[in-house]
Length: 292
Image (cartoon, rainbow, N blue to C red; front, side, top):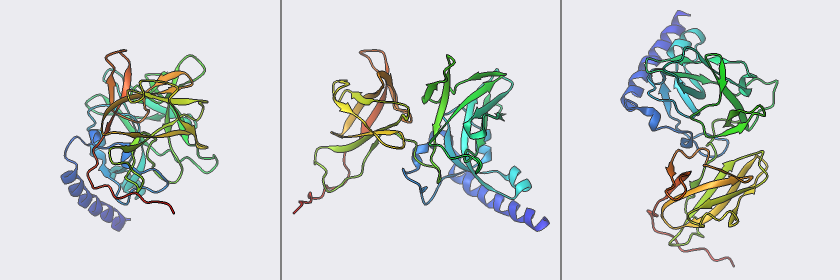
């Protein structure tokens, strides 16, 4: 047991210096769930964070998948590296905050409070083997005894009782990119003046989703998304490099792009829209392949 504790302490010391040198800045603004690629496999080199970084959160953020080092827990469990979902809540004037969700069978998990008034905690949402994994989990915060949705998470649905419940997308097999719009890599069929953009949103309960934006004159009839079996809606468009504003129309209701952190206020309507920057192609476009 003594040798095990020494080994953990030595590994902790090594990782502490490595992580402190690399992540000395306010890391929370630099890491988002989009650091993971779509699919079942995580990136070859995942970002790893130290628990002191969680203790120094300066603001609450939407839930996100992280991998972190917890030396305190390691001395008890022997497990140094941990993976889970970071939940946070800004509650300087509050005394107790916990997160309650389907991933814990609605058993509330208490969050810790730092000296900046941010409650935080990392929850493993894999669950046990008695329940089938779900593509998305609903949850709420319990703030001083009162349930409320996550104000930092735009992905909310009505709970049937006149209030909102928050939701986080997840797929068994490891952290995955939370579904959002992305500019695709060049293919042999790209057009010289255009980039290929895939618009995506996870709305498993929706019947119809269309894309509206300044690129299609905000016409709800121009671009309908196709629903896949996993509840994700997709559509691919060709856009010239530049800045765009857009929203989704989900069963007649205008919503922002769930996991796109960039939003703007439309001057013409006063509504909040998602923002998209389509970058200029950096490389030379290869000649298109011609099918025989």
